[in-house]
Length: 159
Length: 418
Ligand SMILES: Cc1cc2nc3c(=O)[nH]c(=O)nc-3n(C[C@H](O)[C@H](O)[C@H](O)COP(=O)(O)OP(=O)(O)OC[C@H]3O[C@@H](n4cnc5c(N)ncnc54)[C@H](O)[C@@H]3O)c2cc1C
Image 1 (cartoon, chains in turn blue, purple):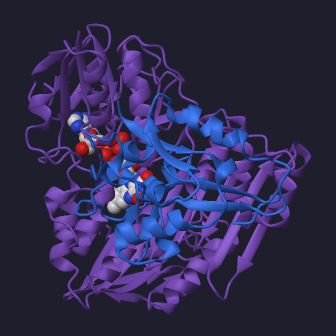
Image 2 (cartoon, protein in one colour):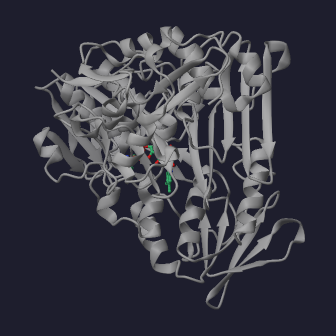
Image 3 (tube, chains in turn purple, brown):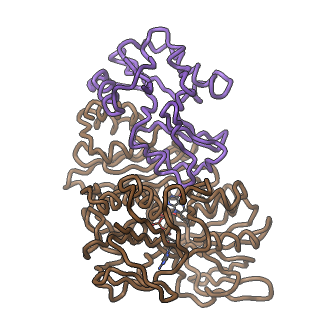
């Protein structure tokens, strides 16, 4: 059974350990701007919502890529950017309707969550189990629905 | 079942792969007339910049990709289609029979009807062959004149600048990327590239090009100062490759007309990609859209229908992202907005000093279009919001007050509604 990230926003305290861990895992530095997971802050509601790629079945990013630089990792099911092949055209960043592929000007390439080869640093770093890595018996859409229910529309957000 | 696919660009290729997944037994033949393996035009600028070799432009990297999937590649030019006998004819007179046919022949660049456009140092930049020729001539310091500052023109400009060419751009419209950017955003892009040393003339046209010794001299409309160049690149738009369909009975407007199954007016003949005039997501009318994400979406829809699985396209939605010498812009859907009497409202955030810009356009409480400059984080959700026609409810007013909160609005509305 493949595993996927499960996010329970109600447990998130906004400590940003996940963002730090993600940046460190991928770039060896603690730079929140480089994190592939983002915690959105719904201020008035006091609610924090971690958000990253759900490795969706449609794989909009992968299908839009003109040079075959995004591939499925057979072991984890993650859609992974091959930086050596990516030309930095950014078309995946506008094709992904979830907004979870982003361009990094420093590297001239795009980045997205790759599930850290099956050991997601964000989940390991999360002190409250708001982010866990569990058997994927849910589809990407179900996951989105689950997160969504935990995001109150009446809340005013800043992120 | 025998599927023939004419055109081996991204549309043809994605259709072939989709068909293979759906029909393990079918014969699939992918026909293209260029002397290259299937490649991506979108990668040409990066080839020109020298970041990748030719093989970096190939749509699939593994040499046995096609054999493994039993996708037969055929290099040939198709000269005629007979939907009654269900055969196509190749330029060498050979015929191929089909059960289902996909036309994915893309488009070709047009050259304005101006004297001198056929001179040897005047090039279009559309194929790998074009790119090889340009790479040989656009040496550092070469004076390059480019006609057209549309989307493709701007992408080529970026590559030429990276090669160290001295660039002059002449655009007939009143701003850069006029068909993708709002007036304000197009103007800001112009300022940015001018600062980077590119000379930009808008509201002007080239009226003639002459060879004078080694140099080309281009006359400019309204008696402007002639422009001297070593090389002229023509990026003045593209037209669908439909010539070979004359007399076939397939309905054609400006491109091949298709319904939302990507089927043409003729049974068992489908079309997708740059060559079609497909139904627009917002307009509901036939539209030409020469962009890759649309092309491959259409390819998948066509392939499903060819395999007998009825699948409907939501209509083509123009989405573009552009990098003009480090300034990144994007545009989505009906970026110009809707009329007030039809429920249209919008918001424009302008920060000229920092080259940041964001425009969101709504109809009622639904996002229908967006334009951004200097924004790279999470821009994909603009597509998500538009394509899912998410009702933003209270979020709309918040976005009118602060459009930068689009990601929060997305989390708060689209995911909830999903
Ligand atoms: C320099 C450049 C940069 C671009 N950048 C972007 C970008 O950033 N984003 C974006 O969305 N789009 C971009 N595009 C546009 C994008 O490349 C096209 O939308 C895409 O290639 C369309 O795919 P297609 O398969 O429909 O057509 P094509 O890729 O044109 O493929 C069609 C193929 O069919 C062949 N063919 C035509 N007629 C026949 C015939 N009678 N018989 C046999 N074969 C035939 C053609 O030679 C061609 O090989 C760019 C284009 C260029 C040139």
